[in-house]
Length: 153
Image 1 (tube, one colour):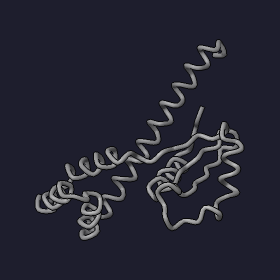
Image 2 (cartoon, helix red, strand yellow; image 1 turned 180 degrees about the vertical axis):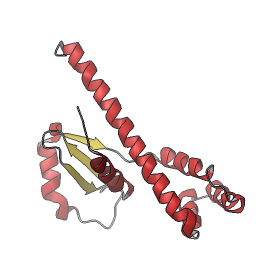
Image 3 (cartoon, helix red, strand yellow; image 1 turned 60 degrees about the vertical axis):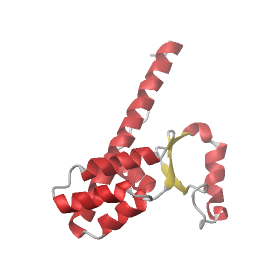
Image 4 (cartoon, one colour; image 1 turned 90 degrees about the vertical axis):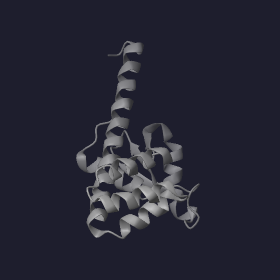
């Protein structure tokens, strides 16, 4: 079972939002974050090698929290746009999402509006937290089912 505090869930959300891979050690209750080397060009793997080796050696102790998929992230942006009251700004966001490079365009529009920029960061964090809680719930349900199948519950 995975049981995390609110601050741990928020920590995981922040790591994922920064593009890191986030591992939870089920035995020690510790959270470890490392760069996603498949998607990072400027990070030297050697700097992280001790932690990578630790996770590899004890992989069965860790649970990997994954970033939202591109489609999931895009859906979060759409949900945010639907909450924007300023009609003019909402139209700019919709236009940004409908052009090529929607993620970059959306970011550029958000960065140009300080009021909605702060609201976006809070909205996105809340969605990450919601996603992490759902992941934990699904994992714990599977764990309980596995215990029943083994006759241990």
